[in-house]
Structures are given as C-alpha cells and as structure tokens.
Amino acid sequence: LDSFDFSDEQVYRVGYLIKENDVQKEYSVIHGFSIIDAQVIQLAFYFDNQSDREWAIETWKGIKLK
Image 1 (tube, one colour):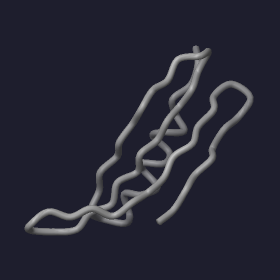
Image 2 (cartoon, one colour):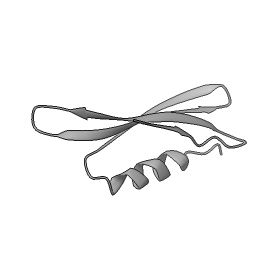
Image 3 (cartoon, helix red, strand yellow):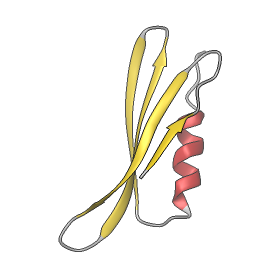
Image 4 (tube, one colour):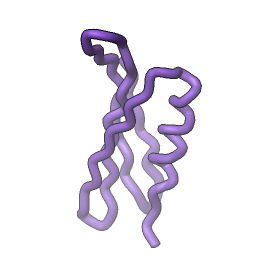
C-alpha cells in the first residue's frame, strides 16, 4: 500500500506498509529494513490504530549508528 525511504548519510532505511488480517480484525504492518555498516536490521511494526503509524515510523527512524 505504501513504500518508504527514510535513508540518510548514516543509515539506509527502506520499507513498505501492508494490511493484514486474521479471523477477528484487520491491522497494518510496516516492514522496514535498516542497513548500517553492511549489517541489516529487519523490523516489523504491527498496529491496528492509525494514530500509531507515526509512532512506528519515528521508532524506526530513531535507530541510529552510535
């Protein structure tokens, strides 16, 4: 449904958002990939309240190289 590229000079961040559902409800999932110094971190943020979308994105963007 949506794709993301939040890359900066230290971290390459790409991902996508899709809708999934189970028997009871539908929810959103952001699958993100962060590449830092040739190491990959794969993240999945599940949420059913759209107000949590920004929290998921900001949490993902907050992963930095120390």
